[in-house]
Length: 304
Image 1 (cartoon, helix red, strand yellow):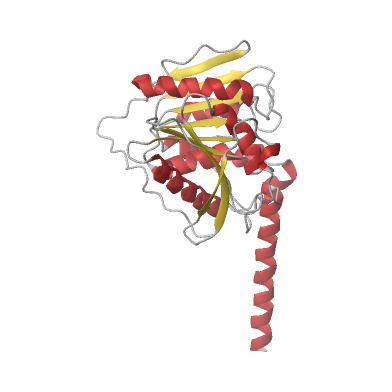
Image 2: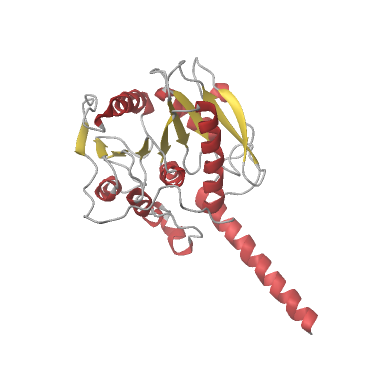
């Protein structure tokens, strides 16, 4: 009888774990399989790179080296139902100012083994952060950027790193529940709270949002900007839905980064194209007298 009870408990646990895996696969919808990077990038092909998580899981990414002496590196994270090839398609438009650009990915996406979860994705982001800092070297200005769910990963990775030059989010939700498919909302196996992440980052935050986004509520950028712990700029783009027009956004972002490098935060933003609105641009909020700011980088990633 005891053996049967143990067996029944083991089967119930297995069903629960399989249910979580299925729920996460439905949530993240990873596109798997080999990636022909030539299909996604134009004239300048990136280098394919491989990084390993702390547990040894190999992950594919892509990398464009920067100009000699340039200390900026932009680490780009893709969103749900995408992969590193699509991320490279977006990130290639950040090239042109001499900055290095690295495309990160997660378990289960493209040829990467495994299944995604919030904890695993943050461990994967940490692996790419280590690789980015190793390639960039001393004096590196590491920028974390991402589209949609990738913006959530970028925020968390920047908070864990503790030394980010800045964060750029594009079409990124305030809380996952706001952007998840309605049928999945009661069953979400993971929680992403970008408001908490934004509060914990004192590096400059640039939040870009389309006004007709049907996936992420446009108010999400307002919410992120309102709680950001450092200098913040919020950009609204008329006519843009959830998919970003990176041919326009990429060059503008790299010019904004160049302005921030000059020490002006977001007070030296480049001119905006027609239909773009600078909703907010402010320096870091004052902190109450006597408040002690916990050091960034002190967070710990949960085990998968």
